[in-house]
Length: 122
Image (cartoon, rainbow, N blue to C red):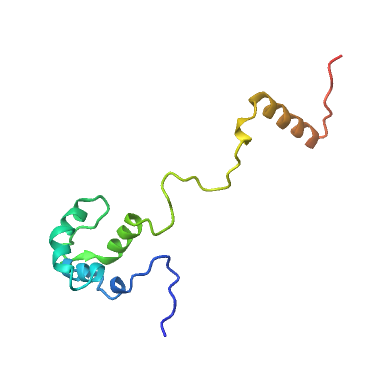
């Protein structure tokens, strides 16, 4: 029985490739043996032109598999980070208050915290 992965995206086929894999090996790992030749011919040139897709390392004779995996995490948005979506809690309506009222309340809270009582004008 295999141990479950702690990584958010786990592709067993990429895990079994060497550190630097040929385009054919990567194609088989990504789309399977039956579609690999077509994918390598038609889709790989398109992906190679995209920013972030790793090029072939001439010294090692292949593409770095960890960078291919990283590219696909971002490309398919598998990390769960959605561009344009703010993180945190939505506080709808809070920012719409009049600026002077917000500043006045904050000033009163600061004065109370410092033990200074607010003096009223007569």
